Length: 250
Image (tube, rainbow, N blue to C red):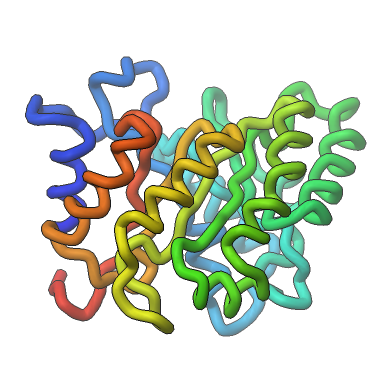
């Protein structure tokens, strides 16, 4: 219900079909970004073998998905489930017209990725990836708990990351977490979300994904948040990452 409401707000009243093919015009489909190999697997209790990750991503690619977030260049010390992302990128079957993006949380992660791309460029006809994702929280408490810095500090750290990524031919997609509710401080004021979205847009993110991290969004709270956000960024640059919370059944 929440996702349906959000889609109506973003794509307008005209009926549009869901599709994954990049060959259709932007007015004919809803773009799906599959984040399971990163956002899903990082929540597993045990580490996942590289071969299992590769098989999962290959199956997703064969299903017709055109954008698959395939891992994260984060320290395996903090997120052991994301260890081996470089090997995953090298071993997956890169489907034509598909993009295999990766989450890059900081300058160190980008440095590792660029080194990988540099060494692989001479052995592959297509780049291992052409897109990275970065993230910021709309909640000060969540930002502090997750990456041990304020929202302003996280944006400052991301500025050179985004710039260098773009200078190396990589598109940059932005995530904003806790756009409705924070597990530490409760309801998030839509104005805060608007400010973070505006900052990511100014950094150069071509698309910004709004994440209902806790899964407490309702049609009313989503609309209130979108009303603010779309004052600074057009709907065509926005994406939804909507979780199913305890208030909504299957």
